[in-house]
Image (cartoon, rainbow, N blue to C red; front, side, top):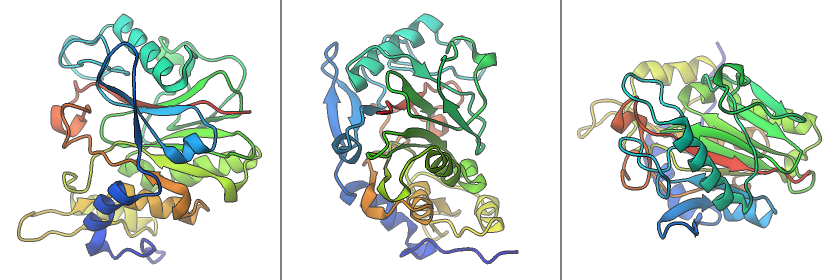
Length: 301
């Protein structure tokens, strides 16, 4: 078995400090934009991606039309027992967030996310987002054509947006711990590079996700990383916590760096989905009927 590769510049016992500090001192602090239909916070943006010319955004739960427990800007379908959010509400929420993020009512490119490493390359016709069974199965969506929003949905997992300012290519990545283990980050970057992106020019933004302070995991999760040669950033068990706490954001930063996206080209937005119930949905906090957040980006090709 390959020896686990350590997170660069971060000992495993230092995971919590790095994640929390990265969320407050990353390259460019995420800025907030406000929707015209609500005084609440609608969309979080990355200054790195904005400076590179990409229209994009990470959602909060504010500004939509859905009723509890999906209140109010629910952007996805919950797979759980109980009455679902209505397709009409979800469609209206997507319209509102898409306009807030991009300035236009652009079509969304969605995929059926399965915590894997498959990348869907979007070109030509866009699948109807209401036809869930016929959406492509993928955990990253990439493309070059403008006039569409590449998107992923989350409710604690990492949403990662990638853009190449030289080629205009972009990608949206859904990365929970399983996605990090199976390699969804390098898979998305490899597809972008194969299609013409410059690896040395790529910029990335990591959006709201569960923070190390709240992400308790078992040893089996850490072992899954180590089994593929990755030493995950984490806070080890101690007097105040009986189990390890995984630092997905810091682990993702290290994997981005290994794939060629240097740390000064990665921005981590300072937010925790679990710890901020007024701003974000959280699967771990609220259960399977939690609403869904989204991250979107428009290519510039």
